[in-house]
Image 1 (cartoon, helix red, strand yellow):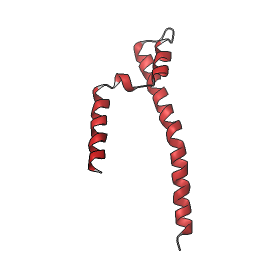
Image 2: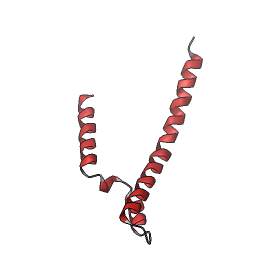
Image 3: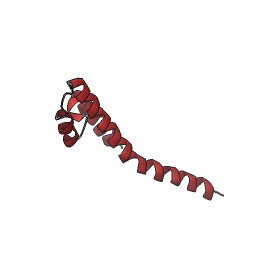
Image 4: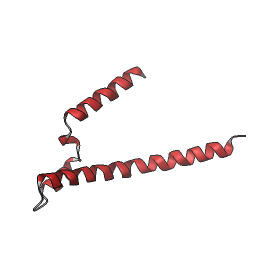
Length: 78
């Protein structure tokens, strides 16, 4: 358990050290760079929006299954 925490902290530090490369997946980052007439700030904001939408889509199934599991557990308790 302790080594997992150390690994998580190490990844968090690396993520904070190189934030510009972690704002979007490679395809999304290339798509935002190819946006015509957009400033670098707008491109960065678009990349962050892509990243947040990916987190939402990836996290929603876990939230639904976890919520369903909690409801089932509470209903089945004697």
